[in-house]
Image (tube, one colour):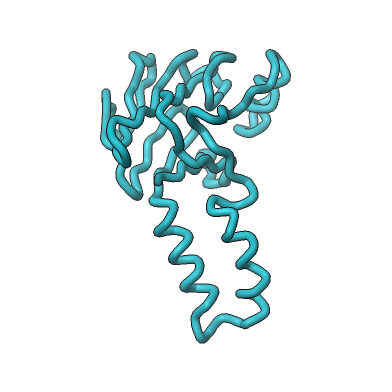
Length: 163
């Protein structure tokens, strides 16, 4: 299972999502997008994440003006692999294997060097799999179901822009 983390240009983590379900996930500035990035550099319907097999996902550019970039190169479609980074406007989307991230965090917390109390305190948080800031994106639940201008203002604040 993959986890998508969205970062701002300055490296701030903005949001984390668990990719789940079979419904395509739309990314753009339109109100009906599952993940909204409401800035002019992002098209209304910029990109889409789709599950094509059990644990195989792709991200597709939907004919956007500024494109989706991987290592500075514009892509039309790319298979999602752990560590993949895709730039969409001012946002950086990083995909990770959620189980590997949680396993690494558990190893770090439970190592001989870790303080026992720190490990005990962190275990309940890790049990939520994606963490307290994660949201599920997929068939069961979509992201950003805010209304109209309220959602757009929130997205502008996330990227440090004011309208």
